[in-house]
Image 1 (cartoon, rainbow, N blue to C red):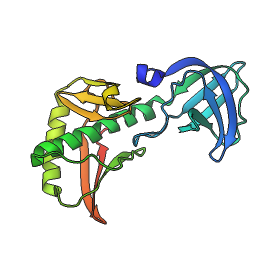
Image 2 (cartoon, rainbow, N blue to C red):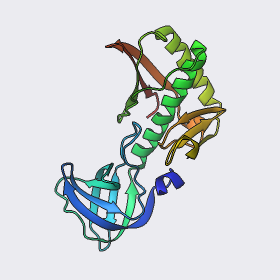
Image 3 (cartoon, one colour):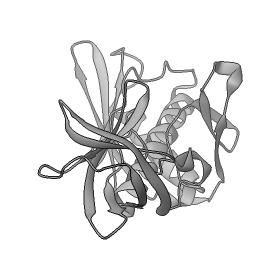
Image 4 (cartoon, rainbow, N blue to C red):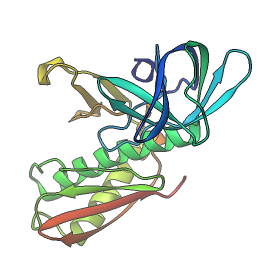
Length: 222
């Protein structure tokens, strides 16, 4: 997929192979998707689809459905006919999601170092437009003081500028991928920046709710 081949690519030629409408609205299926479909907590990409002949369609979400990637269009757009098209990402949105996604991993490994023990990975780690949450299925592994120290350690670590690599990880299973940085590895199928210094300063807080630890985090720089 183009989004795995080069997460920094913002435009690409393709073709509409199919279109339709479902419960989320009108959509287009593309031959070579540049738009990342929602998954692993990361939100689906947005942007525009330039059709041959001039029409421009707004892509408001991207999702996997029925073994295909559907590019959902703004209300009022008609599903396009098959034919050539050019994809254009909402790059600021994509890049912020990439940085947030890596921030979640840096927080997790920093917490493990702070408490001196492995932590089960979050059961959910949804990202929003402004931040994210790590939902841990426990309530007693760390507290606010440990989180504060972990955030400071994570920020010091990312600022040093360590390369980030994501790649297929077939040992974990078909289609699995993993994130690697400075000796740390996390199973992850999302998109990430090339270097830890791109993440920027992480801020975080926590609360306990119904026996779970919820860590909310954001980036000081949009």
